[in-house]
Length: 235
Picture (cartoon, rainbow, N blue to C red):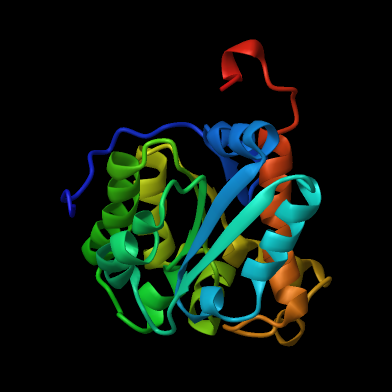
């Protein structure tokens, strides 16, 4: 499933803010949640996903937004794992569980600090996840969030985009997958004086930091799901 380096053709994103990139889709999950009243939502990533952080916050919000829907939530976060590991375990840990309606991912931090991947390796790992999901479960909607560590934050504050984020974005743009630039949102809020790195919580965010991630995801999905479903979107 590692398809090699992607071509440079890119899809445009609708930017709700400069750190929320809505590209397309996300309606399959909504149709399932609203009409079928069931949903299977999975999260894959490193310790940021595995921990009691943004993942349960997003799960709780989805249950509140669709109170009559019976959800199953899959935690496929494993500490210190990179996007390559995620690609190789995606089938066993997520896709084999049945129909996946919505898949959240995060690997920017671990591709940077744990695997120390080259740009090419960052692309291959993320593409391995996205392509596999697209081929094996084409109805699955995907969202990727770019978290942050101190080194990545310093790069953003100096006007650079960390290599893992830039590489992952190349893949996400190519496959028209929505993404959230949480790392830059943190830098923006620190610059504005409304947040400190300590309050955010560091590489493994505190509740305040995870809440920022959850709010970005909420804003993305609220935008994508704002209009009533049309007749052509009925299952």
